[in-house]
Length: 376
Image (cartoon, rainbow, N blue to C red; front, side):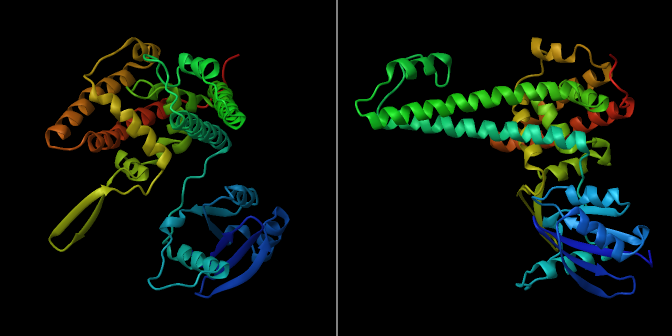
């Protein structure tokens, strides 16, 4: 450790500010280089033997390209969580140079928290999952625009026609007409956007199905096993695996719960202990999925036809864990309601405990599965 050089990079789209913490205590700026592969290679060549270098930069919109470039050169690199970088109270000056110096100094002191860097397969799947999530949000916005436009004009569907069913869309297309051409144009545009987003969703979901079929064996096995749990179908299972990667990297389920940001915040001093709402300082995509799934546990334990079909080819141990989850989480939901908690608070708490069962199933399946090629 005594001869290691710790390098902090403040990475932007076009530039990288560089700082080095020397073994004997000096921390100095190395200036700014272009964010290009050739400039990074030249920097590493200038700084010395790769075995002596330790590089870090903050996770951000530039992704993991710099990480892959550095590791390809044989340099140890960590991508760190920006929200967990120490900040001095009263520090009101922020520049790229100062950020790079702070990263190098904190990295040498061991004060930075590395994030998980996905491999190519996980990142590809995660990009697709998030594209589908973005399309779903766009669909909600498009539907809201159309429904609120119709509401402003006093146009309501016939009795018994539910919103966004095929009957509803048929009514809009055939029955809704306006005297003014401007309003007709508005209606056509809103309808076109609804249809366009629906087409996007269909294409992305088909691509997601294909991506799961061609994923590595271990990833496919975990996705299938997680669907043994009530409330977690393929899309939810794929999202969990894409966001978390190998769950064995979490030493215990409590670490996974903390990573999700679904644990209670706390402000304690002396003999006073005060706990508040969940911290939300974690992976928001994961937290949303497990809390949505948690609502399924408000119902009594049961194995419906759909769940039986998902469990048909799974190991008995996985099915036993899923059945145990139904009993425990349903009892937990009922107990929280009896204590006066709101349904939303109860679902959040159940979602946090659901992560423990997700961890148990995934770790067991990962230990049993190798990434052997699929049989032809």
